[in-house]
Image 1 (cartoon, rainbow, N blue to C red):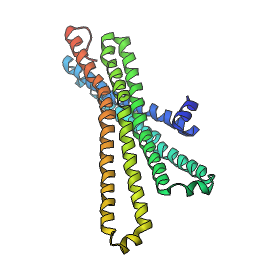
Image 2: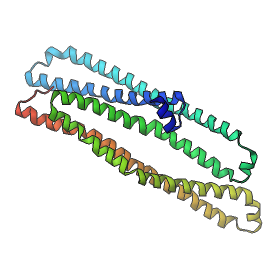
Image 3: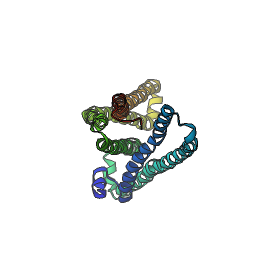
Image 4: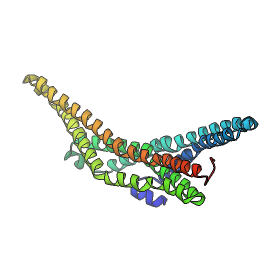
Length: 274
């Protein structure tokens, strides 16, 4: 798996291992969030049975343990995603610099350095965001949901189906939005490259522009390019949020459907609160 991740995402060996750890950390963090819910269900059962006072010490210890587990899992998740991502980003940038250093100078003479720099830095930034925010969170949500679903299937098949229905819907949203996200990213990149070209051209021709009294008109056009980058960046972020976040929210809807099915079964007397 490590080799496949290295080849697919252009990662170092440590970066691939860190990505796996990040996905596991997100899954563990999601599972730890279930402990307070379990305590709540136990409390509801005791309230219905009138035995809350007898289990007061248990709830206090459970709250302390849940807080400790959530803190530990969140700390582990933060280090396994954000810190690991930025460490891998440093390795990636150094690797790119080494490869560029080996290219003959004639290669750079035929190309605009502003375009090259803007493209490389933008790609590195996008990869940082993907590996720190999206891939581990989404993979962790899938893993934790599957674990819960398998447990529910073993307990009651109706509860398992109530949890599993969200997976194909989320996959369909993410898979179906791939082309839209690709177009949004491409338009954002085009706007950034046009802005970088305008800035570089302004630096190189500023004396000629001043001597011909064309500086104001040129800067107005450059400002419009900067505004275009801002608009495209906002639209790009909105597009990512509309699809990726909606898929994540649908995954969380499994909790609501499980609670709904569980409530119906509880009323029917098929299972108890916990």
